[in-house]
Length: 284
Image (cartoon, rainbow, N blue to C red; front, side, top):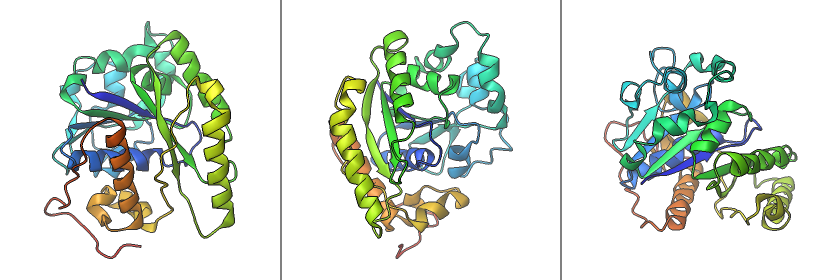
């Protein structure tokens, strides 16, 4: 059975989508069968993998509200082992429409149940909110991956996220666990970044375990601010296809290694990039 990982943080701009796209790409190149579910109405994960979000006819909206089969919605990507269930603007009204539906919190879980066995990992890119879309992601997930930006207000709002996770565990998904905390957008040229990293690591290693009811791991790999990571989505490519030698590319590979190690899988990320990609050498 595949492992379902929801990438969540209701605070915007923490690198959720960037992390979702790049982890999926590297895991797919490690010969893992990967499905990415874009549950964010902004559909950035969809466009970030080169799919025109304005052209698609069916999306996660149809999965949740119309209960269409995954086969009718799923799309292939430039990487062989990576599939996506895309999002489009239709998803914007999904939270309101879900309110009156029986079993609204479990719509995504119900849709994924029979497909979980077909993939090694299923990632869910959640919206920057704690509404019904995020609750659907948490109900369907086995674990939660939380990106935390290396900035002054890094820990702001996380108590609310923790409370939501605990409520879901108590009432909807008792098996939900924390995959780990990923520190993102680090700028090591500033003293503030080092201070924030130390503060976040201390917080998650000590204080938060009471609220989380466990000691969530903080990944050793810290994702830096990197111009190539910023540019890649505009070309519709994960960093491994855009500039795998960049600092951002190397760090997401290292993060993928950590996740594979935690899952007890062997590390075998394919070094050569598929033909026909826009791989830029000498990244920053």
